[in-house]
Length: 202
Ligand SMILES: N[C@@H](CCC(=O)N[C@@H](CS)C(=O)NCC(=O)O)C(=O)O
Image (cartoon, rainbow, N blue to C red; front, side):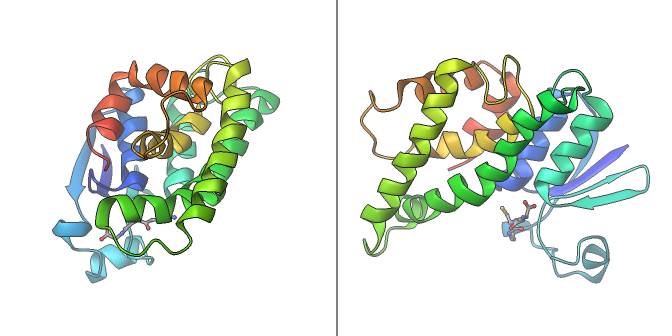
């Protein structure tokens, strides 16, 4: 039985829950992190020395770093669906995984923090410009294909999905980046995205 440590309000854990649900895999959930705590327990640190969620255990394999966990689950259980078998096709989705985390999530972070917890406006205009530029890149790509790596839902969409949801929660004119908006609505037709991302992440 696959085991996962995490909490539903964590975007990194939510990607793993979404993937497991998308692939219709059973798993045991150990609530950890945030209000559940437990990340400094020696037994937890022995599995994940970062003291962060998520952590996945599958048949003796202990894995952390959410994108690595998503890649593993997709490769092991989703070949031909979430995991395009052809390396050249997979690379088109894979590159967006790194981009989603390193660029898009990082740029969104100060705007999300302002939205959820308030605070000073310093640097927010520059952050909004950067997010808009990155959203424009997504919009252009998604004008040409329904999903970020091509015709079907893939690992790139899983990494991007939480941040696109958070982008829609910002105060942005509804006609800005229409292909990105349509993509969000397309993701929302996936029940597992709705359950683990839209309904859970602020
Ligand atoms: N790069 C790591 C980041 C993990 C991370 O920072 N997780 C956050 C939640 S999103 C965490 O564990 N925070 C402490 C907590 O939940 O108590 C990954 O993608 O898995």
